[in-house]
Image (cartoon, rainbow, N blue to C red; front, side, top):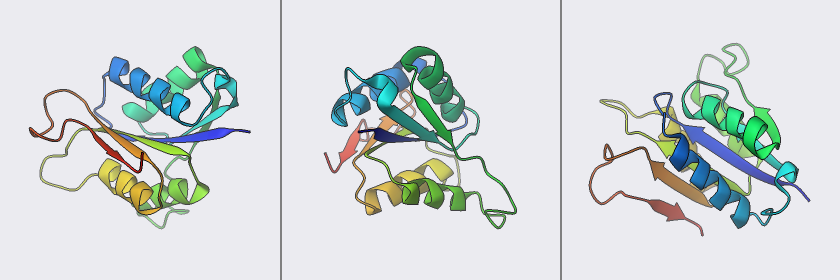
Length: 142
């Protein structure tokens, strides 16, 4: 049995420690604590959190990676279509490495809201103190 963990995150994400802790939590949540190679990490194949989780999955956890790169023709010029694709592909858990964007609604939030709407348990992890007071950690569906 394989567990699927969807990771969505900001391109500005640099906090490896928080992402690592979230990954271990997610792996334990999906019941694969002693069988990390059976886990598949799904991500959007962008910079920041996606690049970090790709590296962690391959070099530290030695588990499968399923990148979903943005392809303008395939996604009809809408980067958020990739988020729908990843959620529809299915996951047992979602990690959102979230830095609130300035002045716009970002792709990370779009993806984790779609995951929540699809019934995927979701952990929103703030980067540092950049997250507004009161939004320290949000777990939906756990």
